[in-house]
Image 1 (tube, rainbow, N blue to C red):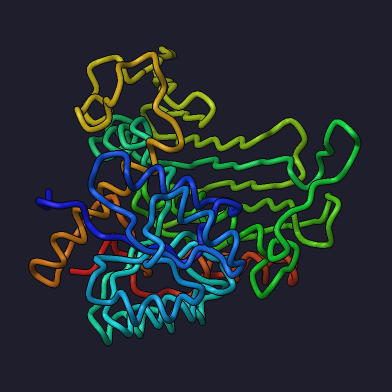
Image 2: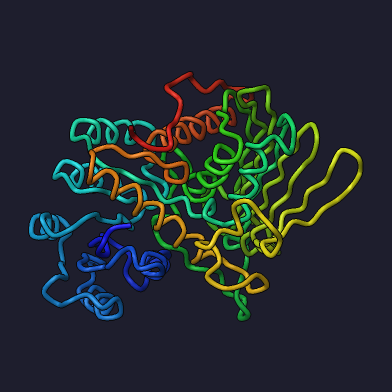
Length: 385
């Protein structure tokens, strides 16, 4: 651990954003980071109010993020990019070009082409880039990965991963439709729902199995109030002959956020549901069913760092984010000392690039009504060594 908290700035992430306060709470939880500067919003009033709520000094609040980078460059350890996904590529590239370490909220960018440009800039500068996928910060998902790595499930055969939500079909108690952020109501080369939800499913399957998508066939539709894709189903073929099914939706009434992962092996299967995050359901080949929870003797989930409070008081979404921020701090500290870093928990841009290519293949599959291969590319790494 570093002797002092790492100095952090936000670009975006105002109080009225979807993720700003979450990142603020998570980065501070374990004392590894301090938010010292920010360009939180283009609205001056919201910018100032956000800075006050986050405890950022008035003189270190900026109306323009480029000006903040110029003024704060020598005083920051990293910046967090929390603006809408379509704006990421230009901001990330400028920060990397200025030699500043970047932590970027998923999705890294809106297309594989944009991600390739980001990676080219990162490599030219030998820069630090981490993308935040917070769900793999849940202790019991980390426990599940340990079980898979140790062979407790046997050979992985197939999986089901789903992330249904209801926000684009639900109404309030007055019968009024929701008002999503404007950028979420436009589909680009990759429909926005992929960048919002599918990125998590792709990352989690790779995180747990260490395998890569090879071929997909997908269907997508619009069932909600808005003229965008809001429901997608996909069959996948992965490396090591693993088959999978993926479903994500914003038009599935009854699901606030129904993230569920099921991994089926030759000797056992495992199921994890975000709304019950402290437990894994393990089903063995001999018919036994086992509930493994954080209060038991567990290889990973029982570590002190995950036990901010005793089992029975569930660690949730913010804590998962905080676990990831602690991992990013470890990676960045190593990078600052040696210009190299490695992490089993933190992903740079390669995985994001693989995901974007997978989503582009899924979109093509829907248009062509057939299986589409994902071009073989260098495999994703968890970091840059």
